Image (cartoon, rainbow, N blue to C red; front, side, top):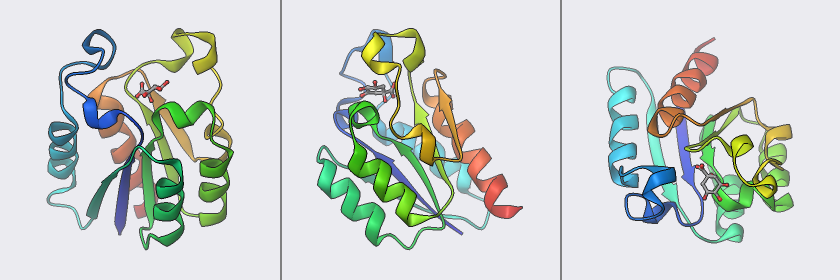
Length: 142
Ligand code: DQA
């Protein structure tokens, strides 16, 4: 089992960026907690962050992962290309968001990614990743 964790644009700035919304944890510390959740289980985890839509599409096209955990960040609300890449890949995919996108500005209420994922976790800060990861591992094991 291999899970690819993808973080989209500006998530490299976590810990410095809009801390009131996204908290003080850095992407490295979130990735570290995912690695801890993976340890002791037979799951390999690869981490990938990009600010570029086409690079994220290439990564999804080319990965040999059996599951994908993705925070598409701003591309959640705009990217037909990432929607199509996930749909074409046909591996279980979980969408996560630190903030509750449905409780924020109206333009964040629509996810173009949600229709092509297995499920979504939104609003639990770092725990959105951990909960999404656990759900994906369970799914891949079942
Ligand atoms: C986000 C929510 C998006 O609307 C926003 O553009 C982000 C982060 C989240 O994790 O809460 O960059 O995906």
